[in-house]
Image 1 (cartoon, rainbow, N blue to C red):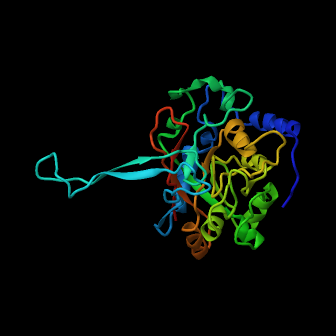
Image 2 (image 1 turned 120 degrees about the horizontal axis):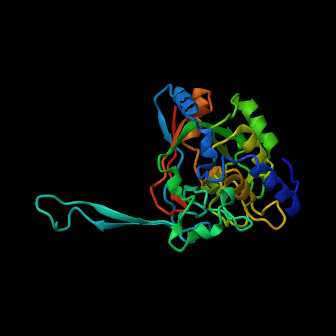
Image 3 (image 1 turned 90 degrees about the vertical axis):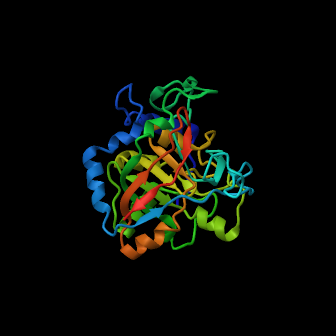
Length: 308
């Protein structure tokens, strides 16, 4: 693992270089989803061999040091209560959720990150108002994100249970994990990187992850661009804390979402998928990601499904 820091100037140069590689024209609003061609999607269906489905989402979390504004689900109606319609009673509940929290699984839309006053593809940040995003909202993914998923397990590569908070994954480690797991990330793939954040939280308890968490080094953004990755998911939020970039928080969010147009999926869990991949001896699968239809939304709760 490299502990190399990055100056603000070096980061901006990297941003500009990557941004120049991610253009599909001034009118583009799909970003890296353009990498998922019909041919690549059809080929991804060939990953289904056992007919097994596995979730990569975590259950809705309760209040904790890393979740000061927890989502809530409460009952609106019980089937044992008097019914206001004849012959039938219903159970009904309601959910409230802070989409971009530090525990619950979610997907970030391309309007989520502003850098230098602009969103992805130079769209002015002002398109996001108190009413939501007029452009680049999660509605751009309303037809779902479906493709070949690949899980790279970095703790497995290092021979540890998890990466400690503050540690980061480099591009070289992503390549090494590919070699170790005998899989290669390719154009249009949905890349999932395990750092062990969720396992550490389960075994040691929650902590203030806003101050300290494992994630990816900004040099991995070059890997995403080179491999033409369409979406990136992590059991953390992909960004190391504290940031390794001087004066720029969440550098991976900036590079992935804002520069490359790569959708990010944060705070997933791979505890269900890992043993299935290990038993099958393969780390690729068909993946279906279906965000809620939230017009103007900057993201959505999400339950990615791996199909093997």
